[in-house]
Image 1 (spheres, rainbow, N blue to C red):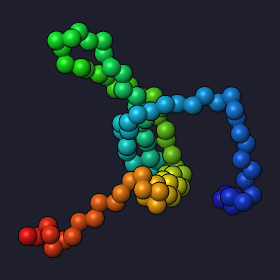
Image 2: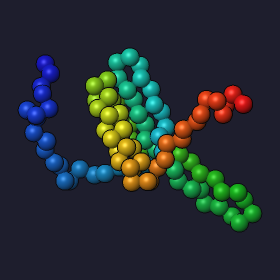
Image 3: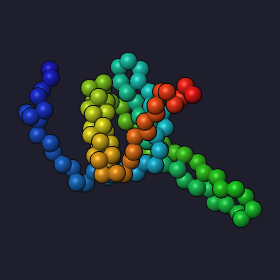
Image 4: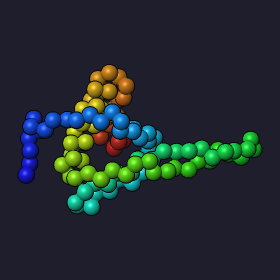
Length: 101
């Protein structure tokens, strides 16, 4: 049963811990659910002559219904539009004629 959003009251859980991620790992849609893996990168201890190295660890695995994934997509589009408006990001527009020449 689909309940309209205006009939659902949000409840805040301030004790819920936040999860930090600096990259996206797995992103998969199997036809039923979307699976997203958020990761965090940790630098390895290094000695001066060695090049820096790191490992990427999963911090959170999120599984969403197609409806929830679509809602996430729509919300991200709104955020990107606001960031473009504020000059924080810029769309890259390519002219097809320039690509052909």
